Length: 448
Ligand code: UTP
Image 1 (tube, helix red, strand yellow):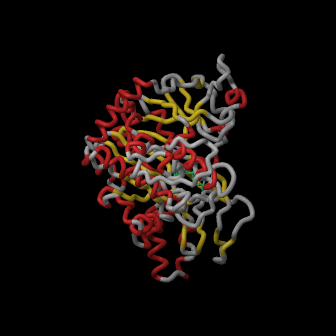
Image 2 (cartoon, helix red, strand yellow; image 1 turned 90 degrees about the vertical axis):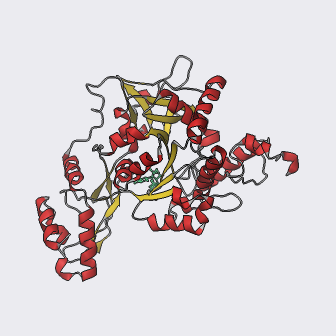
Image 3 (tube, helix red, strand yellow; image 1 turned 180 degrees about the vertical axis):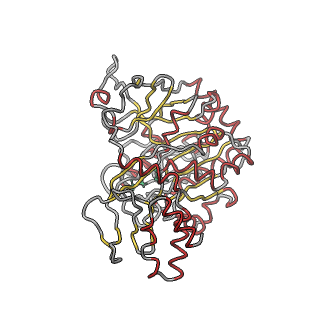
């Protein structure tokens, strides 16, 4: 993009201030700034400006819409599990399953300087979160004698460090040809007047466009085409911060396939009525995710006759998508979510100010906003103790300490140890992916 082209584009969108410091910039800085301008999605930018002045929808959200009801949630029975597992094993062995990890977030609550996946979570080895995810994918490849491509979404901020972590660790044993990194989109932030904020005279403040950016990013980076070429039908989706996740377990993949679902979600019984997880609801024929903060007190506390919460289950972003559904959704404009933030900005004289209070808006897309477009949705209950213990915070709940504790408790159960066992444990998922596999290796309590 040339200076003239950038100038015209910016003035068409009322953003001339982006080139305010042009005369003072070096050639290198000018080239970098033009690169940033060329990367901006101006169509979405216009939608963002529209949102700035829109009245908050709180309270009015339910008006004129069908009532939100709890959807059917499948709980495993032995026979359903066995049937689904067989179907999933067939799909995995045929190479029709891919794994998709979203790891573009900034992990600000954890406060770790690097991609969250590079954080050393191994209770004994200090091995990174990526190790545990990757070794599970490797175990799937070995168990089913098939290739399972592993797509990893990064952001501009953590791409190089993520790729370096895999390279330095020999891709954790995976075939590099089947580990595909792709960058998510970045969006500028706007001030109250809808103007793009510069955080340096030569630099536009940009931040990742949210996990909802996954579909566009998969499309733009050729990953959807790559999946199609490989014959992928089902895509297992998960977040980087949960080292306990059961990746593409055959029974979940199988039930998704049997139901011909567009999206399948694993749901967990909430710890308490106001736990900070999204809740899947049905309105008429359509499904949607309601964020915990948007549930009214009455909805959050409503009980069924048996005393269980009416909206009992929450989503922790463990999904299977049909590839065809992803393709369909990838080119649609998703809803935008706005967040008011403190964003460093440049004064007219070029000095950089760190504001004391929120001065700008960031925008994000959320993956679950595709739910209303899905024809068939499968909701499946899972056991938190077996599959979910996220690393979100530096301390307290959902921290590295609780995650290591829960990982060790799970491995301890495989060995038949009591819940309060203090024996330090760590199991390589590529050695044993589950209790049965561990037993088949002859590993028992008395052999430790
Ligand atoms: P979170 O909502 O926990 O955000 O992301 P975060 O950025 O990791 O952490 P905080 O809020 O700053 O502490 C949930 C999942 O979505 C991914 C994250 O990497 C994580 O796996 N994500 C989030 C993206 O891939 N891109 C984004 O823009 C946002």
